Length: 369
View 1: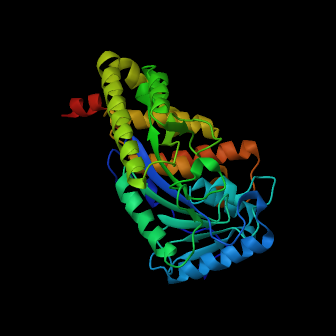
View 2 (view 1 turned 30 degrees about the vertical axis):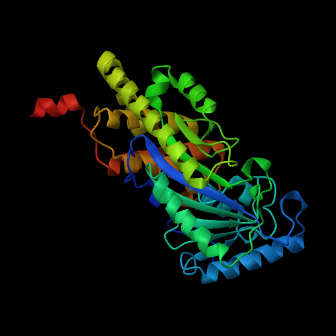
């Protein structure tokens, strides 16, 4: 692996909008928590434990076919802006890069596969966090990829494992399989029809939970909900994946039905909402991130309902990630104040929408025909 001190140029393949149900499910992510025998983990880990774990993980990654031609990012060696940029791309967790004020964990690292859809976080909450991230609704495909890496690393590392409890982790809720599978869903139909509360209550009753754009501790913005399994003990990995697959398929169907109701019962209201959202994005000269996310939600819905023919969902996905603070400062080549950030964000959004071409409504296209 090659050591890098600047973020990868890529790492955004999961925005491609090329997976199943990509108008509703933005991405699928699977993480596996693993710890190594012979080393303290969690809050009890000493600096010597963490250093040894990083060395062992790097050695294993070097000989693993899925990682050995990738890149290594030692997190404390990166600038705070580089760490934030990787977080905004969903390549790392907040626990790995540390808070804005605090330093990242000692001897923490990201070992990233060449295509960046697969990675290994070292010395986060657990010694190892394997992560797979793909576009669209692709739970089983993502699981097969992460499972294959787990097998490769397991041949080279001694995992902490108990015959009764399974894989041992820092947090008791991860004991067992150590698996956290999640899908990032855009659910404006359920929000606008006021059915979202019932749906979220239902998934809680069947062992799932929901979070915001950046997982635990993050707020829901732009009608994006991250659905994931809540427990890992007592079921196999395949059982957990199959259960989440079934529930997400139901939520997708509920969202499709809700959008159909909106299109049938309030077409004029929806068209006005969609075009207002597009107009504000296209012509605003200052916008906060939350404002952009809420407007993007309206435009995404308009694309799905065929009220707009452009921009592409891929363009909207790019805006969602690249209009965040670290990316805007990278584009500007300097630090930005909050006011400057809002101006830079609006300018970037206008440029992206202009490059994708002005949309036409279904009504306008029919008139032209």
